[in-house]
Length: 367
Ligand code: ADP
Image 1: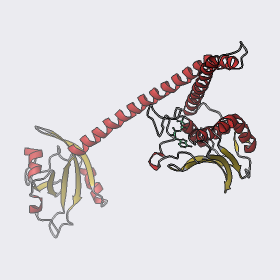
Image 2: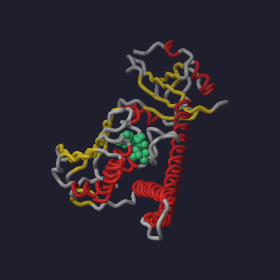
Image 3: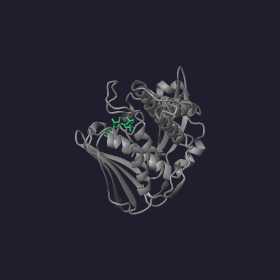
Image 4: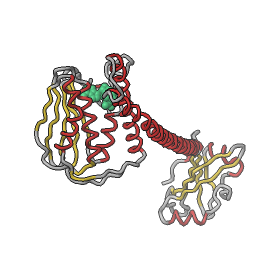
């Protein structure tokens, strides 16, 4: 059944032309079609080749029962990208040829959106490249600076240690106090540089893990030896619970670094006479090392941020705790390289638990 022509007689962004016969002759069209094609379109006249140039091919496609479509740039006082579709309207009744509807859709908006999308995606690609270059320049700078600074710093730490040991003569109380400050500041600067260097090595993919089955008890004993003095100084109660069920397949040095970072935070953020500890537990193929404390705790709103580099819950200059905000981000990066995860449970004013979940067997992780 032929659609009533009046159906196409409305102002819109689409042009409609009805054709029939062989070759196609124009039966009717809507006002938009007149606007676009002007005098190329006349009733009862053959369809202009400027509108449809390859009639034969289009007919073949229509005979196969398909909708024929093609793109064309309509030229007049204006230039218009148009998508044309041709479909059969009816089978034609006795003595009458079938009619076809040629519909043209203005693609200006779609084309300009496409153009904008391409422009923006090129801009994003360019910005991403710039960002990547800036990040690798930053990492290279940090790496070089940390490396260069650590050598003279080592000398300063070594000499101040010798002075404190009175290798160069007896010290007065005031001298001892000042050199002690130089020594501890040197140590914390050294640890900041080491953390920076490690972080940039991990980020630039230059860190190679030396994996092996490690004995966590030995690692913990070693760490505890380092922190014994600090634990005693704050009179903290320290305990180790559980025993590791397996030897995780990890890098010994970096595992020690992770546990050490967590334990030093536990000591730092726990008031005197309170408790801290390390606990081992197992679930499925994971070994869990928990470093816990009855310290100041972390507000829930800040818990997801503490693993970002340089983030500190209290970032004011008047904060009561030293630090760089790099320790936990380093833990997060190292544990990721091992195919494990780090998580935190904490309640403000009650304390925190940091869990390190490490696989007991080797896992393939892109480094
Ligand atoms: P920092 O050098 O400041 O300790 P970290 O990356 O190790 O850096 O920790 C980031 C921040 O997370 C700390 O500044 C502190 O606010 C919070 N935090 C980490 N561990 C603890 C903890 N055991 N108790 C309370 N707050 C903690």
